[in-house]
Image 1 (tube, rainbow, N blue to C red):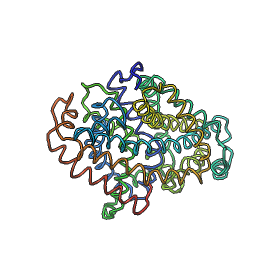
Image 2 (cartoon, rainbow, N blue to C red):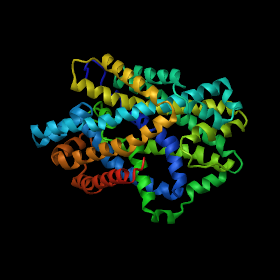
Image 3 (cartoon, one colour):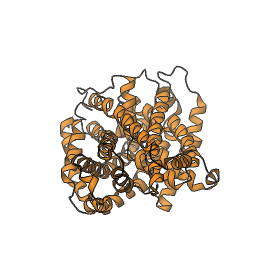
Image 4 (spheres, rainbow, N blue to C red):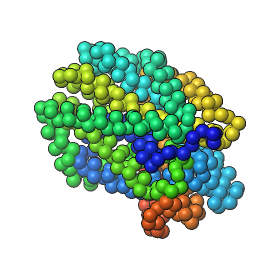
Length: 442
């Protein structure tokens, strides 16, 4: 890490907005409404919130603490955690840390393409083109064609990397703007959708649980997977933000606040998408086509639809870039830690070359769709599981507890560690095994 870079968040609020920015992304905007729509509505919401509380209290707070303890990202943090059992063990941990780091890079490659699609939609909203096309054909026109969004892809990658030049300080400054605007914009959209005829059916679906759905184990599995990835508890990304956190800050309350704002973002997204789909008789579980086919069709049909299209895709760009920042920063900081001779600028240039060199070949949805499935089925669940096992089983309990309790007004006791070891870790293992055996992309 280049210590000349401003490498500490300047305030609790700045850290929180940056962490929320990392967590809030496409998993909230289309993933959460789609999974909620396909798994019993309000019943899924109940299961999801249970896991959100569990994972933020244990997994997310542990990742913040691990990063702060080592003052570096995944590679150094895994090595430091495993080194509590001795130097040879530490070297094993340092080697294993490459797995979750690879997950961050791999998902960043595909994620940048998705944001390029969103930026393309924003451009066509600004020009008015989106208001006069067959949205299905329009989406197929660029999602199925190679190199169709190269200019937008370059803007996304280069623009995001430029926001990382000053480390924590530039990340904090950009998220102080993007995240409040994201919430404001989606609140405006939710109010507009509430005025659509038939929207009330969507609210009933959302807030009237079908409790019988909770008898299905897969509803709990989907809720667990959504909670894991919505919070970015993947054994890599949140560690690097923890590395920039002041020792006086209490990590458990900060993790819970991150989860609160992340859940609000997911709910507000659902309040936009689900009532709108019910109002127009459309499929709430349509996945990516919700953003590029379903919602544009709705926007074409309402007064001031062009304005609301611009508002919608602006918010989605903010959500995507704030998440992509975290993925790039997790990789870039760890590379600097591992190879101190590399400056931040050199690392960012290398990331730009890799992301554009590989990513432009994934622009057709037929390419990046399977790529993202492979990452979310294999690499990310393995990374999350490796992190959970490393913190709660490999790392010495007293070292983890000492870091967790820094800045805490009331220290957490051994019950926190026990629940992490015997409940949180099994959840990570179950999710990993299910994704591997059933090949489910969460």
